[in-house]
Length: 449
Image (cartoon, helix red, strand yellow):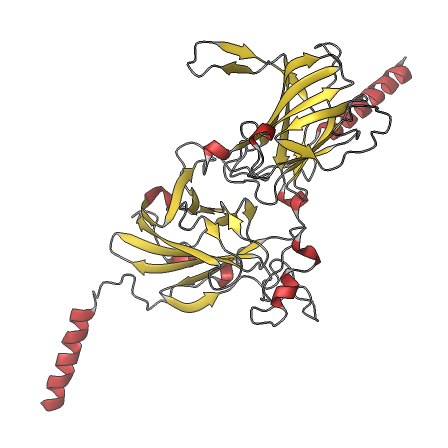
């Protein structure tokens, strides 16, 4: 009995350990401390039953605070649970039709077991549109543009169940933008979505609804960073550049970058990577598509001033609806902002306001042009000093973290920050001028004595 008891206890321990191992988060699980609840939620609403299936409206909501889906747009995929086909679509299309040879007469829009869906382009005929479609796959954030923070399409599914009990939810959802980065969970059947009339006096509801949650991991999206940070200040002549090879290193032949004055620039831009979105960067020591420069510009008695410049080194990309997220302890006292929009982010709660989101002013600088003379945007911040915390010592005036379009940027090492010289004046006010005049006058009198 004792041996049997030990055997059962051993098996129980093994099963418990296995359960804990399987339930533990993976190393690539998406989590961002500045946006811990950020995700893209896919809502699949069945609106009506058909003789061999149903018609559904699929909507993707971007609930991320500062990460949007830019050009060339999203690609949504899944695997059918049975032998379903897509008869027709409105507001989107599949990238491939697949083998529909067994159908005679009406041919389905797609017969693939694992279809991939893409958005339609702006300017699509109205009879092929529904609300929130046809934006080339671009989905903005609620913070920047809540009216364009969702994307929808209508899908007519055949060879599927025709009741809540016989229909099967798709499996293995994938979301690409267009590369990897998002991990989607399984579809979960939830409460049917309610739809209200414009006057709010009547509500209808979907026949069945399921939800899929997709979260982002920068590690999955790319093995190398996409941006870096450089620093400078008025009190030190040192300009701290982005760390060498922040986003990769130049090949000895220089084949992975191009100089702005190269006679082969245009042919390089039009090369094989043009249609896949592969960056073509200017040859630099950091090799990043984007550089953010933080310059501590001026110091006043009660305020201090910072200049932020974002430079695009990518010859193949115009960044529309770009955004910048910066973390600094003095952001609870931003007094004035020039030429950028601003919203505080409070990921930690408890009244901690040390994170700010910036983005361009519409029709002015919301488009960051490709590398070249026009490939930069800039703004200045005026911040009120906190008498208990403010200092220029030990790099306090520089940001703690910087994100561009949701990706964490490479920061210089703290020991390389521009340090405050011991003899440097702490303000731009000429406080020592009277004393200087006194010594000059005294020296002159002594010379003639």
